[in-house]
Length: 300
Image 1 (cartoon, one colour):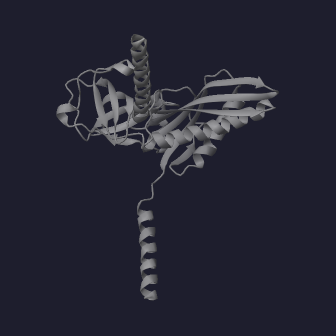
Image 2 (tube, one colour; image 1 turned 60 degrees about the vertical axis):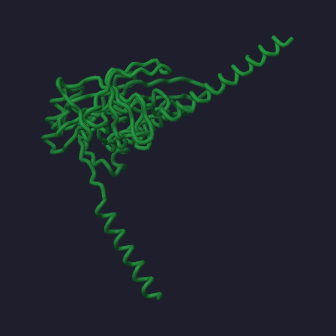
Image 3 (cartoon, one colour; image 1 turned 180 degrees about the vertical axis):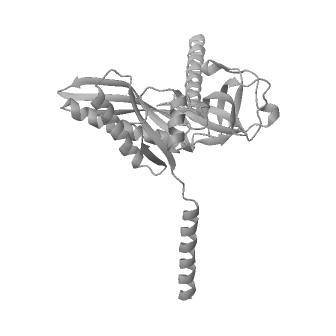
């Protein structure tokens, strides 16, 4: 009996190892071309500091196989220049990072720093699908240099995590062809009018936030763009902003996320519903109270 048990256990271990090997995700080779500083803070040393921190964060992530290409291109550069570098280095994507803001303030003798970055991942063969992710990092220290270093390290880690989420978010159109493009939908409680909407398979469990931007593809070619306006369990609602003329979206069309906002703009749909329910419950209780007060007044 014991021999059969150990035989089964060894078999399970071997099977599990084989599955893990088969499911091992291959890393994505990318070329990091450098940093554009739009914040007005610092100079070449600061840009180098941000670039080094990003390379460290990228190297520590198993999904990305990054190559330092900061000497290949003078930034800022065009999408065509990015694609050319990617082709020369034989990588499918090129990454540049833009420092958008650096905020410094002094509080109780310490320097507090907040740095905002936007990562731009440009596929070598499809510049129409530029992927963007934004993140913010904070640092605090009595010395400004150390506060900046902490913020740079934090924002580099955050932006790489955003890229990881961005690259993993792939879904499809859910609605059948007859209902793929709906008439205008009006949400009174949110005061929004969605001219054309479509349901997609990505949801809050996938990590999709409200405000994310998506592209819908047919046979690998982008045919429509949209913005996520509601997130639910099992699906999300996308308001279409651009659609090719005479296009009919179909169930199963590929969906790629091209932009992640640093924070959701509204509550996910179930949470918003719960909040609205509590508000309605409160209003109903108030109405009962006022009605009761009115009856008591009339009784007197």
